[in-house]
Image (cartoon, rainbow, N blue to C red):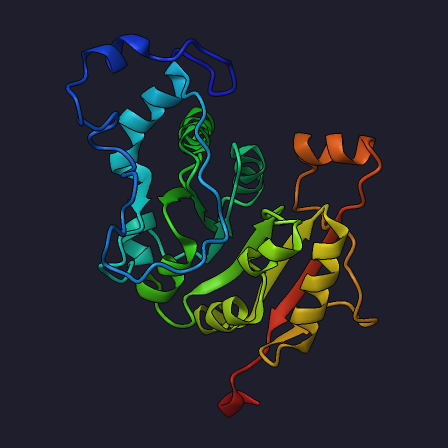
Length: 268
């Protein structure tokens, strides 16, 4: 790549100007709404963000999406062996921002595949660029609603881990129903996690952290890795991100939660 994936570039304005009306920006890239009208709309736990796509990110999306991208259309069960080209363990990461932490974790553990889901186009391009720049063949980027991915496209007991780092806290009380970590989500996630697989959450929003701890602690399909039933120390494998560092500088408290998927009833 001629451009470093982390170097800000001018957006590809020329490409935008010559596109015909209604023509997608990235014809072979992530679709704006891959699931379309196939599924009943639910309360969304994410808020798509519009922001500038740099030339480097656009280049990565154009070149690499057909190879390493996955649109969440809900129309098939994903074959991880086909998607990654190997049978290594697969961890699902929901919400990766600009992808720096994801890339660091992939580099530190090349024997684990990471399926990283987000709806932020610049972040998708940035993570693809980082994977390409650093030769990280164990990253695939998924675009769309993680709930549809879990419910419609992943086989039971197919995941070796699930990571949810700094999800939208939806701080206003009337929006709490939009928070991702709730009983219904955990019940669905448990069906896709192998027994013993780790669910790792992290947040710098303390009221949300308390809610996470309460709902996870009460869920029959999960058990806390901490004997005292409390928050966990930040594990070494989760990098300290720039966003997190800024929060710590402001006095924010970051809480990690590490829970295990308990064995199925017939395995206990």
